[in-house]
Amino acid sequence: MEPADNNTVELSAEIEQALRISEVAFETSDAIMITNADCFIIRVNQAFQDITGYSPDEVIGRNARMLNSGRHDKIFHAEVGMWQQLFQDGSWSGEIFDMRKNGETYPKWMKITAVANRDRQTTHYVGIFNDLSERNNREEEIRNLASYDKLTRLPNRHLFLDRFAEKLAKSTRLKSYGATLLIDLDRFKNLNDTMGHDCGDLLLIEVAARLKDCVREMDTVARLGADEFIVLIEDVSNDLDETSRRVGLVAEKIRECLSRPYFCNGHPLLTSSSIGVSLFCGSEIPVDVLVQHAEMAMYQAKNAGRDSIRFFDPVMQDRVNAHAALENDLRQAIGRNQFDLHYQMQVDNNHRPVGAEALLRWNHPDRGMVLPGVFIPIAEESLLILEIGNWVMDNACRQLALWAKNPETRKLTLAVNVSAKQFAIAGFAESVATMLKKHQVDPSRLKLELTESVMLEDMDGTVEKMHALKALGVSLSIDDFGIGYSSLSYLKQLPLDQLKIDQSFVQGITNDGSDAMLVQTIIDLATNFRMNVIAEGVETQAQLTFLKHHECMAFQGFLFGMALPVNEFERLLHRIAGGITGAFRAFNPMC
Ligand code: C2E
Ligand code: MG
Ligand code: MG
Image (cartoon, rainbow, N blue to C red):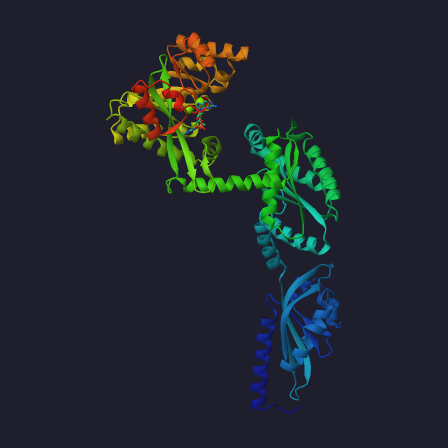
């Protein structure tokens, strides 16, 4: 054998070194697979075995296609043009699905590089890849967290609305009707508080399962929040009546199913549900509005005594819209100076004016004069009553300050209506004190008319607040007395000055024996508790005679004048003071 020359020795040392380096590099955490030009595997590393599950013996000599999952054949070979790119550029990379030895399909990121000889002919391919399934699972998990309810695993509101929008598009194409059913558990909060949150959670999970059992696989059940679920039933029928009938049956099935007992730690629990249904066909009405419709119907079901089903009714929608428009206008009313106080006379036994009740009027440019019976309930619901009540108190006190300067009006008491919502706020007594001070009003001229409902919520707080008001020097009257739920025992505890007999009883006294009896009892009650008593809504001489006969002390009603703007009210007073006969009659719509 010829001895090697120096150059050859150096070269073989370099090759040996390079081989050692590539040997080490070969054992990385990325899988490496080397094939010949015909794609037959000639070498793989440990990571390859870890990811694919195949040992080198099982793959060497076989075509790399054996790893193929079949899931992306077309894309892989034809469309993506992997081979084309490999021929052109010598390398390709991308995400593909392959199959492990155990049959599991998995995503992987793969780079393939062609190795060419000096004649630029491909001799080998080196494929390097890593397993993407874990990363994809994490991404999936994050997507799930954002779209699914953790407790019940149902789609959440967000995902539901997305799916609903898709289904609406489909409904347009098919011209078919579908429905959303909004389901709210009755008194869930009570149950949660008394049985504990763990039981509450179990119940919600069970409700989710029962809901899914009640509908078809293709329908969607989602949890909107707390104890509110929604079901989307698609493609029911092309006929509205048929859809209503079928959806009604599903809703009834759900109602019945949810009312069956639940068990928590062996204890049976009972609950019921209120279900609101809105039907749809096509995508004319947006998804959030359809959900609102179902919600409105659900509240109707609640109002109907719970454990019931209601379909959304467009007439109800019109009413809701009108209500919203009125509330919107009401919000602007103070700023636009649309409120006014009218004054209705209160007289004593000798028909001498002793005071007036301030009654609010809303003069709307388009609606005309809106009466408090229409707007006060809306103001109470929206809490606008707080701002409005403050406006009334401010203007009533301003009027009292003006009256204090005039001998004809100086002795008048002004009764101001105070809503229970207004009375309930912390600092109400202080706000009255501030107004009295601002206008320098003698507090004994101000009378607050409260309704029996102020007693309903917090009796102790009410007693305390009334005492604070009494300490200011104002007097307190209970308005519409007799129609509330008040018990006699509270009367004892309250520092009241007056009971105001509700006009419905006054109107009945001459022809309804029980009303007459009631009025008589109220007058006796007031006398026994050392309160004075006023009758409101006195319209006829016969009513007045009866009331006087039973020793009622004061009167208010059309017989003595209706509620009038301040200048007309003052003119009426002036005529009475001047002894003009028939003065009342001139302002009495009943005469
Ligand atoms: P209310 O305090 O019981 O007022 C008596 C209502 O009966 C007034 O109606 C009055 O105009 C009417 N009325 C008076 N005399 C007669 C009569 O002889 N016959 C008949 N049929 N009705 C009579 P109005 O002004 O429409 O007020 C209705 C209700 O609105 C009031 O009932 C009161 O609860 C509320 N309200 C009025 N102004 C205010 C206010 O400033 N604040 C609050 N919170 N509520 C107010
Ligand atoms: Mg009143
Ligand atoms: Mg009243």
